[in-house]
Amino acid sequence: MESILFVLFIVAGSASSLIVLSLIAIGLIIKSKTLKIIGISLSIVPILCFGSLYSYYSILNPYWNQNDMKEYSGTYFLDDRTRSLLSNKYSQPENIQITLTDDGNFRSSAIVEISLSESGSWKTGSIDGMIQLNVDSGSIFARPDYQGTKPTLSFESFNNNDDFLDIRSIIFVKKSP
Figure 1 (cartoon, rainbow, N blue to C red):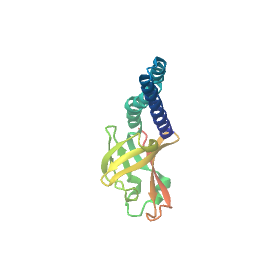
Figure 2 (cartoon, rainbow, N blue to C red; figure 1 turned 45 degrees about the vertical axis):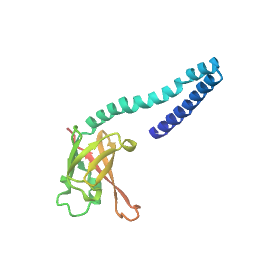
Figure 3 (tube, rainbow, N blue to C red; figure 1 turned 90 degrees about the vertical axis):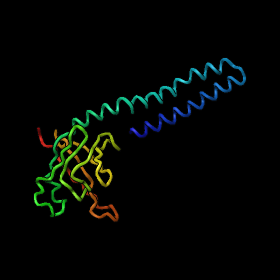
Figure 4 (cartoon, one colour; figure 1 turned 90 degrees about the horizontal axis):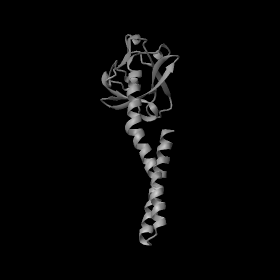
């Protein structure tokens, strides 16, 4: 939804800017005071479009992301239902965890199935509201959700990296404070 609104505001702002500039230019060329006034009056449309985008991405979005980081900070343990999706090489799968700190760093058990390293940084507000974890090999994404009142993180794992058809979700549930 955010992407659609972004595109609409950019298209509307750009189109109205062209119309405004055209009206003002034509008004200057033919010395028409009426066209210049109409052009200046219509300039409110691109100002509102681009001003709304600036306000959203510079003020509101960072504020919401900061609140989300506080909400999702904590220790997450592997959900019992997804434990079987991990390979048998983990000696104690019940101890597999991810700890997100509110300063934007994380510590975790290294999990090969989702390319998760033992430490890195994280942030909210990524693609479609996902949480982005920056690791040595790049970035991985977790979908935040809730199981009842407990926050969860869901990572997608591909059983076969050749065709990406066998998608599995590895879920972590936040430990109650």
